[in-house]
Image 1 (spheres, one colour):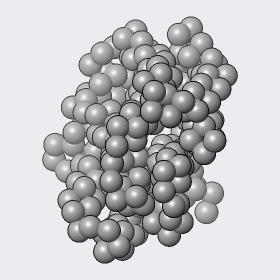
Image 2 (cartoon, helix red, strand yellow):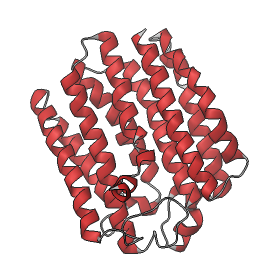
Image 3 (tube, helix red, strand yellow):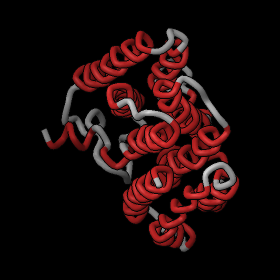
Image 4 (spheres, rainbow, N blue to C red):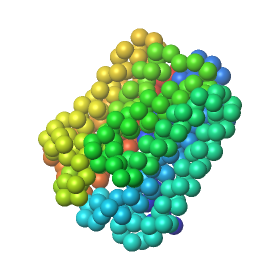
Length: 285
C-alpha cells in the first residue's frame, strides 16, 4: 500500500486542499458555511489531483519519460505496478470526482458540468493522448486555471450562489502557489525531460529563468494580498506565511538541484498549507 500512497504524490495534494479551504472560509465570512457542499468540493478537488497524478504516472511511464528521473518513485516506470493497474487507479479517482461533481451540480446548477468536464479532460490530457499539453509547456497555465481560479471560485459559488471581486483576487495567490509546485518539479526534471522530448515550460525557459519564475510566483502570491485587503482587511494575516517562503526561495535562488529540489517541493507544499491556514484565519476574523 505504501507504494500506492507514494504513487498518489502526497506532496502535491496541498494544491487540491488549500483552494477549497480558503474558498470555504471566504463563504463563511459572508454567508452560512455549507459543510456538505464544501465537502463535495474537496472530494472533487482531491480526486482530480490524485486521478491526474496516476494518469500522469501511466502516460509518462508508457512514453518512457520517467525512465531516468531524479524525483520520487513512479509506479509504472519502476515496474512496481502494471500500467493497466495504474490507469485503473486514475480512472477510479476521476470517476469519484465526476460523481461528486454531479451531486454538486444537482444541488446548485448544471452549468458546473461544463467546468467539471473541462477539468477531467485537463487531468487526462496533461500527459495523456497523442498531443499532451504538458509536453508543450502549457501545464502551468492549466494548473493555475483549475487549481487556482476554478477551484477557489467554484467552491465559493456552490456555497453562496454568487461571485465577487474578493474571491476573484483570492483565487490568484492560491493559483500562483499551486503553479509554484509544478514549476519546482519541472525545474528538477529539466535534463531528463529534455532528453525525453518533454518540452515543459521549464525546458523552454531554461534553468535560470525557471528559478526566477518560481521566485516570482511565490512573491506575487503575497503581493496580491494588498489589493485583496481593500475588500477585507484581515486577509493580510496571510502574510504570516512569508516565514515559510524563505527557505524554498533561498534554496532555488542558490541553485539547488536534483534531490535538493525534492526538499524544495515539500517546502513549497508546506508554504501553501501555511498560506492557506493564515489566509483562512484572516477571512474568519
